[in-house]
Length: 208
Ligand code: PCA
Image (cartoon, rainbow, N blue to C red):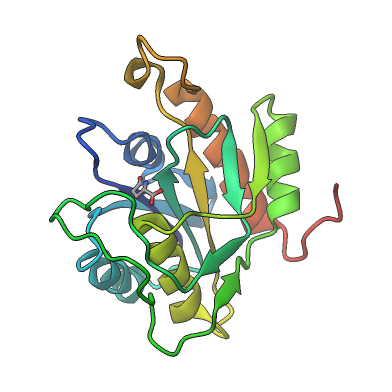
């Protein structure tokens, strides 16, 4: 059996729930082909713990494709990230109260890594499923970007494709506010279309 690893994050910033984990959890053990299985695992929203956990997952599952997913507060759609930068600059403390300001994710690492996912083809597939999606040019400077950068750093040159997707809040998280949200079923269907397309598309499409 071949493996696609999906990760989601534990809740953070006083939210009781993190849609990224709810959505990837719903896809755990899904077969996207007869011999290709999704494995979903949770990462801590902690700068000092997420890297070790991520590397453990890569070693234990030996995935052929890895997509990390996180909540992007305020995002309006399935946002497929293009670039991870070598910078931690936390606007809020993480779940252990750490708040790194202007530190490197990997000391002496390259300034940035591009995703190795076919992001334009993925956006197209998600939209064709009737779900809002776009390419995002920044994954921020909090734990999501840190995990995305480490993922690209760890897998660079190994032929295992990887990247990051931000998802919006769930509707129940934005009651009484004007903030955008997306229903869990929609998010799950969007991620599934994105994962399948990533698996099936070795070379990205040229799309606007
Ligand atoms: N979103 C945060 C970290 C965890 C999560 O789900 C981020 O965008 O960095």
